[in-house]
Image (cartoon, rainbow, N blue to C red):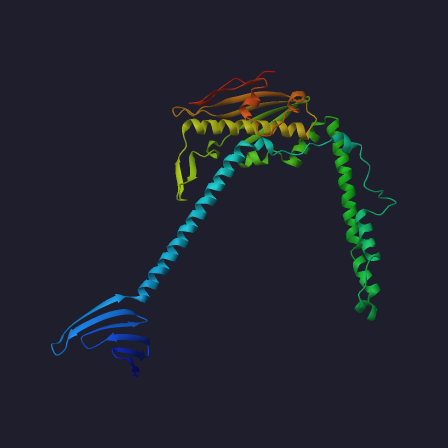
Length: 356
């Protein structure tokens, strides 16, 4: 059983302060008509004394107003979150498009095999300490003990703790020396045009990893000082068929990409892959020429045939001098001996491999 508490205090004629268990309110008026305000809202009531007739209306509801405002805030927050998510998705889409058409800009740094082959050892392993051991001993010699170390005679113990890793340091130096030996030996074999060494370089640096992660396959062989490459695209879906953008209100918009734009984007992707492959070979190996044949399915819906869509020959003495920043990939390929037939409304058409 609960007890109710209510007290009404007269503040002025017709004005009362009402104190109850649920809060404090104010009422204005007499027996005929009265307006009451409390934490639950504002109420108007009127009646005819002695008749039993009365009328009551809730003018405002503070709890409802608060709830409505809270819902508005939640809705605005949700809208902002959706706009941020849409902006993020469009940003990722634009990054993808850019990455597909500038593969040729992301290549390995050129390797100077002559410099590596003629390089001196990092240290004389038979009579000299390695750089890691030297650095460790220098750290011990330059150790500055604290007053606590001096007070408790811990100076020598601290130095010994530093030098405790001396064996690990020796192993690290042996690793440094071994790496130099291996690199020097590899450089000598590369310059001798040993094909197993050339293959080892491609395996070590994995220059075509990004292309193959997109679903394509790069195969190659060496004919003298020429690299002959076959690029199988194998994954036409890597190029998006839809366009993602933001509306004026910040919402995500998705629409089908125009066929002409899709075909142009696909051509840029294929040509960018081709230029990247050539650049990688010229940067990593002492090849004089690179011949690349690109294969893919036809766009014909009637028959899914497979054939050569691009064949291009790059002589190193011309190719190495090009600036590959902000270039048109298809126009760059057209500067070299090539077979490529591209129609704006149909895309790549099959061609014969170059015979050079």
